[in-house]
Length: 553
Image 1 (cartoon, rainbow, N blue to C red):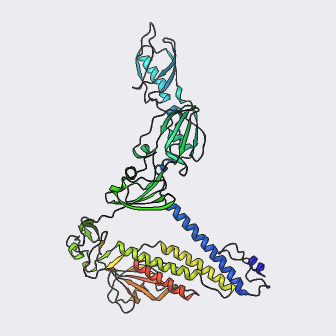
Image 2: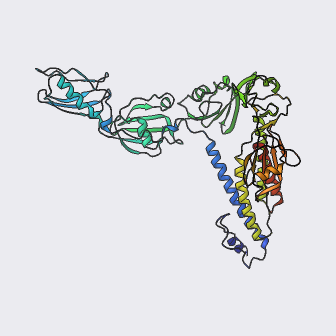
Image 3: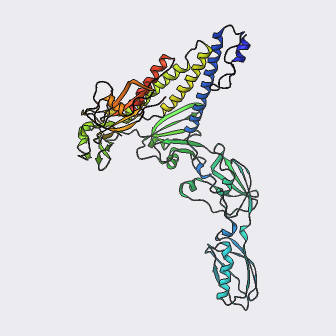
């Protein structure tokens, strides 16, 4: 009997449904079947949550510094005939007729080539060729010969270093192999063709150029990523680029200009070096270090002066923060204002003190409806919504069912509520503080909103035609609903909110609709789970109050 129950519980997914609609006849205890189904749905839900958390943690880690170099842009090689000559390039030159020469010339440091003296014939002297493309080199030589009275001399010229070379790329790269290119291609080009540095294994700071068994150059990509500096190396056919193992890496985040995972040269992993790479902002005053020391978790909190002397270890995470208290704070003015929107004020200053410094448009500003948007209130509103969503998830995914049919209904409701929760998590509260002509102390980052006078009433949410309507003191709340086409079939006619211009929120009823108001009609919540109805209604209400939007089901 137990095996029959297990076989019956094998559904393709929570949304596709089971191939059978009723348990097998030999299943005497329907309760056991319901229990198996619930366990299956809970298991699927837990696996989904774990996958989301894993992805979030993976995305939270900072990317390695200089990883953005390898996006395929360096891998493209120029055609040989479009490459310009540079000092050090070799040129094969053959002349016959009035002047004879057969040999190889090297472009000197000044970008010229010079023909050796030829007895009895004029000397051409120094010929500037640097910057000439290979297909223009022959024309330049013929012009020089014609100017010297040797126009009937035949010319063959070809750059010697444009022949393709094959370079081996190995070590800590994504696609080790043998790659073709031009000798003038940079080390970055060949690394890019190999898929770039493997950020888990490879080093961005220790790349060896081998010619035979000899190391002829070492390449560090950080100077190029920071300042555009890269060694000028000419690669030969058969050369090998070896990306060494990744060195000590430390992650920097917080109050820094460059948040990334930084790699250190040997014996260079210090706080001073990390600060030079990450460039903490002027507000940064302290550093929190998390890592491992001698197999045990390690955490320390230091002012930057002491942090400079700290020796860092592989895998450390450093969070730079601004913990010093300034005598001033920054506030911002929005709405019917003019002049500078952001300005510093004394810490502890009150709203009434600052009002005198805000230049407003007298004809447009509604000074009686001033309100504040505050970061700390945003955080509290987010937490309240998150707590409500957590309770909703617990209610929806742990509800019991008395039959197989009810279990399927619960599964569909759980899927619907899961999508609702995801939408609700994306809502950004505004953090409105209703002042109502009172005075209060300002906080850093406060936004003082001076609304514009308005003769319009916005009607939105569960109405047939959401729109802006001209305010009329003779109209009631119901008149505005009628003008917006009336309620939709999903509307909760007993739960509508009126948002005042000063940020206050009131329930519709006997209150009058005022100029500049916004009417929000919330949707009706229908569910077999009574607690879920209460939780969804609470989330809808909190979202509407904190962000002035109606979240659909």
